Length: 481
Image 1 (cartoon, rainbow, N blue to C red):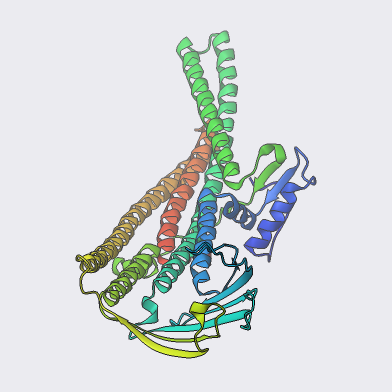
Image 2 (image 1 turned 180 degrees about the vertical axis):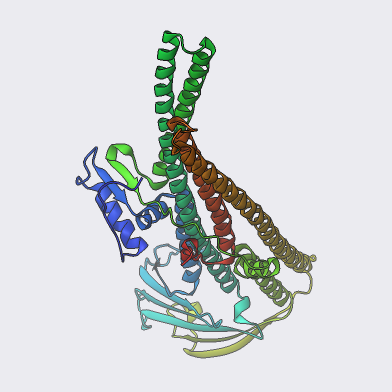
């Protein structure tokens, strides 16, 4: 798994490594059959590019960014051009107004502080014999009194979109961390499968050799036929073990390549395997781990923001159910038509409205908002309980994984003692063990060592899941640095 030509990326960040990998994979430099070595950083970069959860999270963030841009557009300047005077008005007497084309330009701006500005300028052909200006315009300013601008519908919609986008970005970061964990696990599973295949092939080669020796002894009549049958059984078992190991290795390797978006027809890939990452990082107490996970949980944060949004929407609904007042300032130029012949100038006014009878619609709307606040608070508590259960379950799995590591370590110690004993027996003047027994003991020791490594990796996987729940992952802790 670690042989082949190295293409190091030391000192490069994950994004730069990913860009380099994409460029190399797309180019003709890697001919079919060429061996390509990928470092762990390159593997992680490819996983962050091709992992389905990361791709989906990126698409979700892009969609949420568009939604936020749409909500923020409510506070962007608007400009509209419209045609004027293209119709004909016919009076009851049968006379018709002359056709007077024109154009109107309207502009508007809404500020987050609540102030709304609008202006309209219209240019239209003069009526026959009229001395009025062919240009008229209006300017209006409006501001809601005794009302928090943050309770405006557009402000609430923008806030909700911003919260969703922040939650999406946090989930994207979690997906990247999870992609790294899965890529590391896939690397290790592939490496372990390759090691088991090596041991199975060695056992099969020994079984073939022993079968040949037994067959010769059976032909010479020095052993019973049952010994030959026993050798046949051992050969079949070794052959079956080799076939299972081969299939497992091919499956694990195919899964790894698919996770990284690679294919064997692009080249033969070898990977850096962090065999020395065998530390068992400690964990905090359950209470501290739960508190940190709740504080960093995206679901809890989003539910907490949803409670605040629901409260703001309730306050806005209550404000709309009471007295509404607006202060307005407008300026108008002299109009062109008879009904518009007012003196130009400024107008200042205050408008107030209060619902006297609406069939209970506003009361029901307030009740719905109150129910929404209660549901949001319940969802927040449920999210906290879910995080607590996840942490407690992971803590239990970590303790179980720790015991499995200890069991595997004792099994390895026993295998080493048995291998040492066989070596001593083989070194006696009259050997008490055969070379085949020594080779079998050595393979048993190698299997026990691999089992201990896998148990340690399983503990690290549970630890990584707990770290993702609590925030950023300290990858250096896996190597004990």
